[in-house]
Amino acid sequence: MSLNTDVLIIGSGIAGLFAALKISEYADVILITKKNTAESNTNYAQGGIAAVIDKNDSFEKHIKDTLIAGAGLCNIQAVESIVKEAPERINDLIEIGTQFTRKNNAFDLAKEGGHSMSRILHAKDLTGKEIERALIKAVSEKDNIRIMENSLAIDLITEHHIKTNKEKSDNLNCWGAYVFDCLKNEVYKIVSKATVLATGGLGQVYLHTTNPIIATGDGFAMAYRAGAVMTNMEFIQFHPTSLYTPKDFKEFESKSFLISEAVRGFGGLLRTKDGQLFMHKYDDRKELAPRDIVARAIDNELKKNGDDFVYLDITHKNSDEIIEHFPNIYSTCLKIGIDITKEFIPVVPAAHYACGGVAVDLNGKTSLNRLFAAGEVTMTGLHGANRLASNSLLEALVYAHRVGVSIKDLFQSDDTTILPQIPEWDDSGALSADEKILISHSINEVKQTMWDYVGIVRSDLRLERAEKRMKNLNEETDKLYKKTKVFPKLLELRNLITCSELIIKSAQMRKESRGLHYTIDYPSLALNDLVKNTIIKNDNS
Ligand code: FAD
Ligand code: SIN
Image (cartoon, rainbow, N blue to C red; front, top):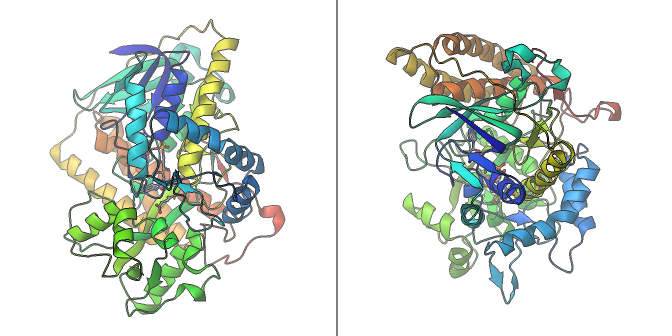
């Protein structure tokens, strides 16, 4: 099967859906998504979305907080422009029906780590679900947006796939993607004049993560294979507080349940297993220090005391207010027998967010022609070496809008585009049941390796070990891939390995500790002339 469209969007989180809405104003869109439409990191976002709304707040303060968290690596133009565009884009969300929580006729603005002001708009502790609901409704009302669920993008189509028309690798175009139909078990192609990558994060690279199972880093890997420039992949954010659950607790499929930073913003205190407060030993901002500091402090306490978790304590606050603010966290903890109004919550850090990604300019253009990107898969320069809480939904929203504008400009300047002839996918090969089991083992090996050697605290030795293991896994998987009919787990394994390699390689390039990248071999900041982004490009593309 082959489909043609003006714009192919890959991903149905906030970035993909909002871009679809904007682009539908002037072009036809096919939006593919690998599970059902709502399944995305966006859908699980709790704390909210940051913006300057309060009259006592200012753009300058939000910019300053973002730059401090970013530890010298933010792109100042990106930071300033995103922060200043935030109120307008939030208004777009409100206009399509997003209901943010209000109190006394004003937005109930919450506070989170690293923010000097209360500036987080939220929908109780289910902000992502509410944004996703409103966006899906708005998109479903557009006749020229076709949503295709259970459709997993395998690879971006570039000149490499057009055998008669190989171009120099520094002038590649993206002409859509090969897609796996997860219901029919077959591959087809979608050919487009422009493509938007909005595939979200890669948390599933790690054993413990807050990210749902869709977050296997497909977009990062596809972009890298296609030859796009990748930046700052070493900066993986570990959220300090995911719920520690007993090993036999199967409720949350392959992911850890998040206990929102807003709980600390509300007054939550961190305590060791024997009840002692400890954050004052690490930072003057205590529980509300930026995430890298809090996660490292917890990691240190766990190692020092030989404990499996620390506690988050909110029991000193009013019970009704806790339940009112955090209904989802309250009811989820109750399922494992913890009443958070009376008992401490056991928490551990978990991989949460990729600050690096596909390099995009201020307009959402990648280094490949006709390929645009928005959301967690990108590196815009907003987060630098560490993302400020609740800045990622904002970044995705602003860049989805900008991508909409950029593609409109492209179409206006070049309305004669003829889509090239793209060959069909080579679907030969087979796979035995035994080999399928090996794939599950390999996925577990990737996750365990990354958790053990490329986590919150790194070293040259650990990175070298991870590099060697990933090389083996890569070779084994590549062999299988070449002789096999593709299927989702194999495709995801391949992408997990590529993402892991990109993270390891970038981490090895950074000979200093900065923001989220902490290594015992280079425990301080490097001299100023070393303060730069790590850049990786696939030379074989
Ligand atoms: P996503 O929302 O992850 O969407 C990606 C989409 O791409 C999905 O639909 C997925 O199925 C699809 N996809 C992926 N690969 C393929 C493929 N190969 N083919 C087809 N489709 C594909 N940020 C904040 O700012 N505030 C918060 O309060 C907050 N809370 C969070 C809580 C949790 C538990 C998590 C996990 C993250 C949180 N974040 C928060 C981060 C934020 O939610 C994400 O960074 C953001 O939602 C990413 O949006 P996105 O549109 O880029 O990607
Ligand atoms: C949270 O609610 O703690 C997550 C916020 C974020 O990731 O920005």
